[in-house]
Image (tube, rainbow, N blue to C red; front, side, top):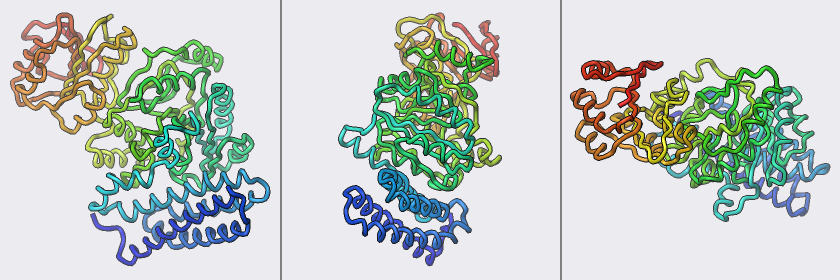
Length: 553
């Protein structure tokens, strides 16, 4: 790929990066001045210097933005100048606000601006630099410094951060807050972060009236990018979109769940109006029905906490040590291209490839109005372009085979199994259908004694399968398949796409059936060769939706 910039522009790039670093150092001095309440004459000098620096950076970066609209540093600078004016105004009237705006808005904005500008100008389109960036620099540049310090010391300032994101839609935001605040557990050590992303409808004034722990307010929508994720000081983050109503018991249940297993990195509660077969569909006629359902549903039940391959999240609970520390995945700082679609899928992929669990928590129900926050902000071509970029970056289609389970597995398909159960997935892509069998055994049979194995002849899926399986292996011929099966006998087998097709089909079918327990169940999708085999051998199969068939051995 051709380099974006000429040698002369590279020199300007270095000057801009150096100026951003100088601005950051100036804020550090200013923070100490305010914290220690020293000579206030430094305040005027430093804020004047910052104003000049940011203005110079804004002007110098404008040609970059005009040529490449995804380089948004001039927009960020305009937001920073606005924040700086707020800091100056608050100096004499509200020292707490002055300090908060500086530490928890201007400083992270500069940090984020440096990282983004550095990436687009010094990494993007420079293949020789990308390896170093993704192996090391991204963790240094994007990790949360508070999280890093807390992971190192073992002590977090808060147990939970609750962040509400809003962009206009004030009427929904008020409903969101009115449901959230009463349902925060008493005596929970938490911080409330209200993130107003440049609203123009009174949201800013409303948020200020609530006196939250932290108030993050870029002047322009997404003017600070993901900088807000740099100000979290807790072990866990509960992200809440402003079109979600948090119900009683949800926060307690979610915290209990995430603390139960160090491998759980992300939890999404059950909600209405969400994709990925996560939606609660109850036909509510009124909010009285919603509250009644929540009271009945939100009773702690570990067996209703379903591991998923991917999750969609209008509200989610995340482990910050996994997401934002320099030893984690640094998902908040990941840039793969100027089209930043499929963030849920990107986070899910990073988590499962590192062996972390993602849980759809059915015993925690919230009401979701549905795509209120951003539905008018998305380019119609957003997903088409983003899907291509995702596949290029990660080697898999985010909506490829097995990204979500198929409809036959939505309802119960497992028997009342007790004791040890073996489940095998064959070419199940990401593995949602075979994983669903294991999770059904947990939910309907309260049976946790299950081993999930997956085999695939497609190497692009093996990293994802290893993340959600007890055992996963790449198998490319009948001999290696036989070696994999060995002496194992399976209670459930899910076979999704054609497998080791170079081999004799009948031999593969004979081998597979010999490793299914008596009374075991085989699910097969769209496989004419197997149907011919079943007819030839007088095997009775049951047709299911989406071209699936079921054979009970």
